[in-house]
Image (cartoon, rainbow, N blue to C red; front, side, top):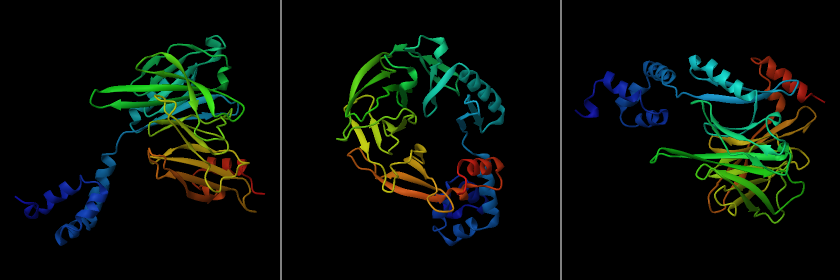
Length: 327
């Protein structure tokens, strides 16, 4: 039996399991298919099918209260697992600091009162499976608050094996073209020292309150307050990528947010009182990225901060008005 001879009911059941883009393409197959897909009945069935087949997800986010006490919260698509997961993560945050993350893994550091001041003990934790791996202690001649950490991981589907690397960068004051980092790989489980050579002739300045490193395309990216990026390959520290700040970036303003969204690197800055009436939020996206040195910033969003206020969220309204008051 060919597809043309299938009853409408059976054909509809097949179409329900296709991605939305494929469904639209199927409308071009024939007038019969187009009519079937265009009916309100198909639309209702398709939307209902989507809601019952959502991919599971877990969202972890960090927040601080008025006393600067960090709490790590969790939400899960499956309500039955929410409370146990949130309780587990909360117990970890009582004696560990969250330093970095990559995919399902979190990098935690033991708090200062548990170890000597110059010794750091890190843990790689999977909050979903509750697995915890203690990394070998490392003693560095720097206060632990001066060390920026990054975590990157990958999964070999053929060997069914997860590998990860941790990179530590001690804080430095000036722009440097060459600086020392400390790296641990899951393959060796030993700390090693490496020198990073920044490809930018001006060097790189790591700010004391830098954002967590962001894993992207096999590199760990750090962002400076000036909006410049430096990507480090933990397996070859001589292989680095550097990106200048986007066009329109205000050098006297700090970076407000930095991370990956929809598979692309994005950076955000809020210009205080850009106009008489409101501050402006801008988001740039790094596009045309490749391993040959390509990559360019494009302005993706430019919106008045006042437009972020939502009638459905009184907390958001109060926060925006307090942090970005009208002049």
